[in-house]
Length: 149
Image (cartoon, rainbow, N blue to C red):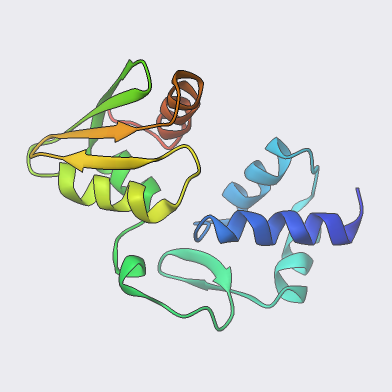
């Protein structure tokens, strides 16, 4: 695929939120059908003038808003989510005690198209998807972030 298409794919991924590392960016590009080496990806990052901050890679000059104060959804899921159960178009996400609110806020801030909304208690997040298929895809996506066991 062309360099232009690859650059557009990178920017589309960043529109979903910061990407923590080059390895993760490379993996996400591969899932979109772009086989790219580390050297090429480094050049792309330089050409697109991407910057790496505490949250990961993002567009240069991208303003930091209140949502960016949150740790990344990847970090929060990896640290606090212990179980995900599917129920039709709903996910019940169990977290460690006191962690549901930040996990829900990070899921909302992720702007993932599968997430219609969240409702959080103390150790449980109810995630609402528009249908059963999207809920299943969302559960898989969250599990790929590294749910604790």
